Image 1 (cartoon, rainbow, N blue to C red):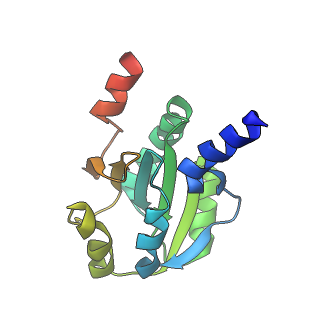
Image 2 (tube, rainbow, N blue to C red):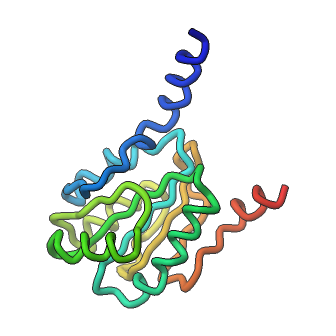
Length: 159
C-alpha cells in the first residue's frame, strides 16, 4: 500500500513525465503557458526548434546524449515547423527525445508572451533552450547553442 501511495506522489510531482508518446501533440502557442504550468515539479528542458534549422540539426545528437545522461530531466521539445510531416521525419531520423509538441499556430510575439513571465525575452532565433527548475523558475537559457552546457546540472553530476 505504501508503494502505491509513494508512486502516486512521485508522479504527481511531475504531471507531464508520463506524457511522452509516439505522436506529437498539436497546440497553438497561446496554449503553451498552460502546458508549461504542468512542468512544475519537474526539472524541464524546453527546446524550440524546426526541422529546416541547420543549428537545430547539429544540436540533435547533443539532445539525445543529454537525455541519456540526464534521464531525470523532462524534455519538452517544441517544433515551429509549418506542418507535421517534416517534424515527424526529423523526430524519426534523429531519435528526438521527450514530449514532442507541434505549434500549429505561432508568431514571434506569441513566443515572447510565453517566455515573458519567466523574465526572458524570446530571441527570435532557434534553437532556443530554457532549463526550468522543479519550482518552475529559470535555471539557464541558451540561444543557438552548438552544444548543451548547463552549469547547475553539471555540478549536480559531479557531486
